[in-house]
Image (cartoon, rainbow, N blue to C red; front, side, top):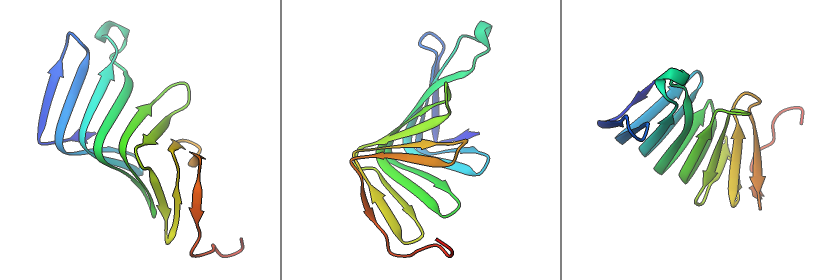
Length: 127
């Protein structure tokens, strides 16, 4: 489900542009942005989402994990993932990871951080 202040659907380019306080929710994951552009397939091919671009004040929230950036790209195939660029930062509790690019694999609940810097402030029990 995606909510926003405005929605512009373009059948010719097969895009839906959501603007203003955009919130996309799927299961336990919520993605926020100023603008989201959804690229979808032709209705004859099922109308499935091919890609979503989130732009401006991007924030993904799942429990106590938060990933922020200037831009994110959601790709459902071949492996469902969100790629964060533009000063991406991931926090979990008081711990912080930054990098050039953060890829979050949704189904596996894992992240790949390129050129990372890690700032650990608390350890999890038993680790």
